[in-house]
Amino acid sequence: DIQMTQSPSSLFASVGDRVTISCRASQNINSYLNWYQQKPGKAPKLLIYAASSLQSGVPSRFSGSGSETDFTLTIISLQPEDFATYYCQQSYSTPVTFGQGTKLEIK
Amino acid sequence: QVQLQESGPGLVKPSETLSLICTVSGGSISTYFWSWVRQSPGKGLEWIAYISYSVSSSYNPSLKSRVTISLDTSRNQFSLKLSSVTAADTAVYYCARVKGTYFDSWGQGTLVTVSS
Image 1 (cartoon, rainbow over the protein chains, first blue to last red):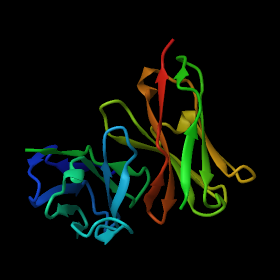
Image 2 (tube, chains in turn green, orange; image 1 turned 180 degrees about the vertical axis):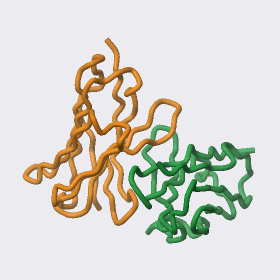
Image 3 (cartoon, rainbow over the protein chains, first blue to last red; image 1 turned 180 degrees about the horizontal axis):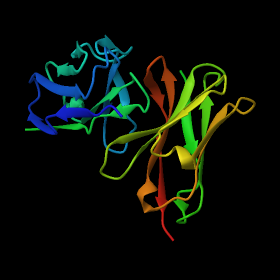
């Protein structure tokens, strides 16, 4: 299985900040990397697919980059509704695997 | 806009079979792939299986011996059966649509507790 490792596991930030979350794959996954946002008691929501493509309806303050094994999710100008847990997910091969999550909390 | 809704028992006894249904509305189940993902309390996300309209399927090897996923195009539903459950199978179970290589639409999730 391909292991996905996110860092940091938790992150404290303020409204208006710029934050980056990293995701590393245990092997080359090209650009088969997706990012999701999950709020308590809710299903994950797709933000970014194929490493850098913004899902329809997702604010442009979210962006993704990277390829092969190293990927980044960037949120510029944090909004109150952005405080949530973020997961990366590889779809290069089955079994599909997710990172352990990064919890973004208000400072 | 496609919508997915999970249904099934919220409590299952150890060693029994967990059965869930996902009802899809706003779109035909005869296109795309459809999947189950679970999330144990306080833990991360675990992919279980997916199935396509052509009835090809794929399973997580960690669960494959206990999992069956099936499609009912007449009812626009797909289902999950997980046999011989233990407390470790207690989780929120989500159904999701697979578009390309990502999960683009999700159900709200249903908590299944395994307990006697």
